Length: 396
Image 1 (tube, helix red, strand yellow):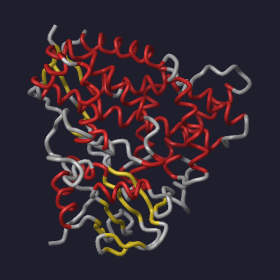
Image 2 (cartoon, helix red, strand yellow):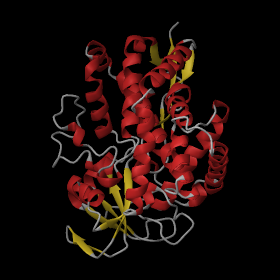
Image 3 (cartoon, helix red, strand yellow):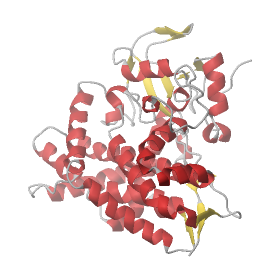
Image 4 (cartoon, helix red, strand yellow):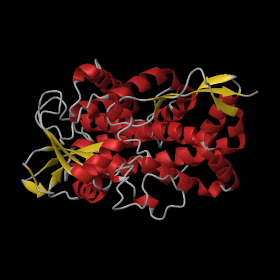
């Protein structure tokens, strides 16, 4: 029986695990004919080893997905070496500038203030109040964006993720105005950077980018699109991890009690969650030459959907992969943040925000309960797995 793939299907976006299992067993390299919105073909890799090859082998696979159209932007995710090597070096410098100094204490202060605000309300929509708010405040602060532009930053972040989905084959009509929002973000960051020129470096990400631009290491467009990359790397994955991780603790009081008694197991919890419910479900690559995998001929230049969410549940790599187990040996081998030269630059930040958040909530988690009249809802954006809404009742 042919496996049908519909990128617009709700069950594919919210419950892909049964399909992933079929793909791994029946069609580990699946040719989807005319599967993109414009009628073009793509291929899907679903097994761990094939996903790892696509992410790590720079000779066979290219990360420059868009090459001749308006989405051929100078972003980390859309560049190969040597441009990627240069941009990644700048990215690491910018992130490290804050991470190695005051980021931990600064993040804890934001976490504490947001939790106090959440606990003061009898009912709260947790995705809005916390899982969206925390990464927005942190990333916005690292980019020098003031709090009064929070709504704009949320819109810009959504535009960045919609751009990735369109690059994968989603109909642009599903995300009206996304490119205009990207341009708006670029113009704003360009104005912010211009105002910083010639000024002392404040030690945040924007300051580091301006320094690199002034030294001729980054063009203006690269500086702006790198800001987009930071939003994508630091916001989207973290938001999904925080919301889903908190819901799991509410669903499983025994697990929450265990982590409250053993808070040092929080990192194990985070890694197993990233494996089990990868916040980013797939990445994209193009083949650099004709190849054959599992008997399927894949032509040069073909678009590959690299299914991280499926690789993380491959029984060839993980024993009993559909069981959530914080004692799982080797769970850090998951691909929740990708792998290879494009490993997510925001991974350390995302882990830090999740670790500080979960530890802070253990002592008060008993005060939260689901609203039976308004149950949690999953997001339906292509390629992303997480909560869109989670209304909670807070005991006072």
